[in-house]
Image (tube, rainbow, N blue to C red):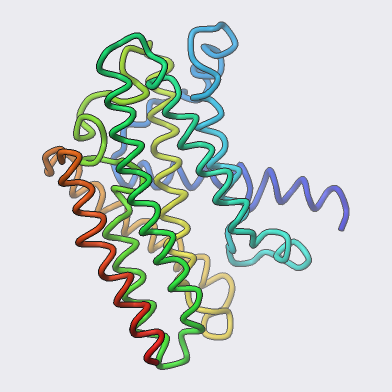
Length: 277
């Protein structure tokens, strides 16, 4: 495979440019607060020492992680190299850790506590989400009857736990209304950069959930599969918009119970159905 193909993959589709376009599109649909030029101002602030480098990396790593998901229309042999959930996991988890660092080392008495809260909720949510992804992938293709209920249970689990996995909205430090966690006590450029990173991570997890249950090429042609994936992400963004500001922030014990006692049982039920099938 030539170097040009690798560059087009990493920078074009499904690489950084695709991730950026997808983030902007879904952010507009969801009505997310993504300040225009936030990434550009954040980059300048990092270069001038006015924003943590960790926040810039936390905003860029999820864009790179998106290139390792099994997006439709990727030609071989790129597809073989692309479908690497281990790399996706590593890039995305590194992004979550880097996003928390400014809050953890902040001199503010509130920021470390808020960052630790987000770390606990996000870790619990992503554990359940990854379990559901594994169930969905192990279920087999959609045209096998036994796979349908398993995939539906996995999808329900992923959608249910998605806000907690990304520490979004009621699962963020302040219910998603004001800056919190890593953003607390930072300047405007750093806050804008952190908000971008939050939304990119949320879209990366949503993309993982959608692609894990996307019908196989044998059932739907490539262009239609891509359109279906984008449509599913748009529906998720619409649902997030409808929920934005309507749910009160959840205390830490309540948020953890939500992950372990509401979302996790669905994933476990999927495992039971898979084994019995």
